[in-house]
Image (cartoon, rainbow, N blue to C red; front, side, top):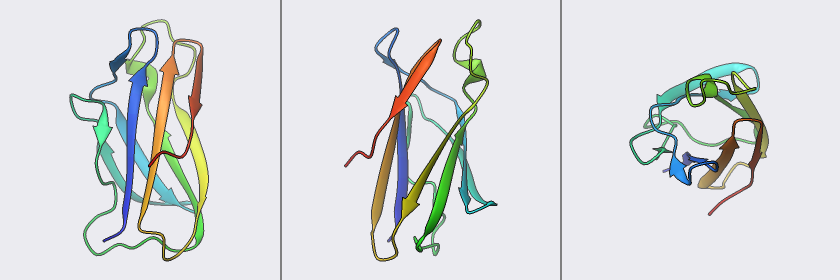
Amino acid sequence: MSRISTHILNTSTGKPAAHVSVRLYREDQEIASGQTDSDGRCANLLEDGLTITTATYKLVFEVGSVFADGFYPHVMVAFKALEGTMHYHIPLLLSPYGYTTYRGS
């Protein structure tokens, strides 16, 4: 089964960012959405039966609710996925005035 997962960590507190809405796009079409759990994770944004194809994917995180005075209302992370790859994990490290991401395992 193909999986695309994410995890959001609030780096200013060292705690997960819970209940953040996340949308997944393949090219420009929204294909899934979810919300981080109490541990800041979305374990699998792909619905059963959807597989990863070679395409550009985008995760859009609605992070405006994480910080009352935060600079970013949302963060968009684009990545290239290759067909046949079973799992992509894209963590987001977030602070009020900055963020970073990487390909996790």
